[in-house]
Image 1 (cartoon, rainbow, N blue to C red):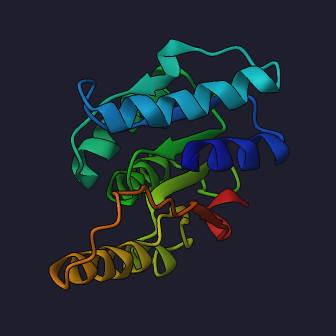
Image 2 (image 1 turned 45 degrees about the vertical axis):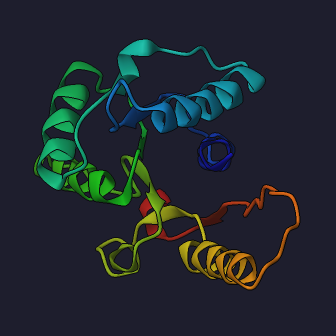
Length: 169
């Protein structure tokens, strides 16, 4: 659902050449995120281009390396979604290293909304997954179980939020 929000936002800003960088190919989470990305592209009639998808480990250096290669091979790309904010920080560094401007030439969105996202230059647009709320709810469930609560298990869903900052223009 989070990647659907990010992809929709970029499409509404006029982007049609949107890349996805990060995550390991064996990751189920990555597969789910890619599914959200692809569904929004299809919904808007934008062809999915598998050459715009690159995997890498969760680090700035890997995000930067993969992004340099991606943009050298596909200069038409105008937006990149990072699998995690840490990868998106590397994406932003590579864009700058190539003499382009983040938010003007190429939009960037991350995932996790870590504290540093608001402090980068430009500030990183990111998907917030409400880690604090998830932790609080998990703690409450554990405490109630320890106190003898016999209710059947249930799923608790926290919808992601898009935190828009200047990395998207």
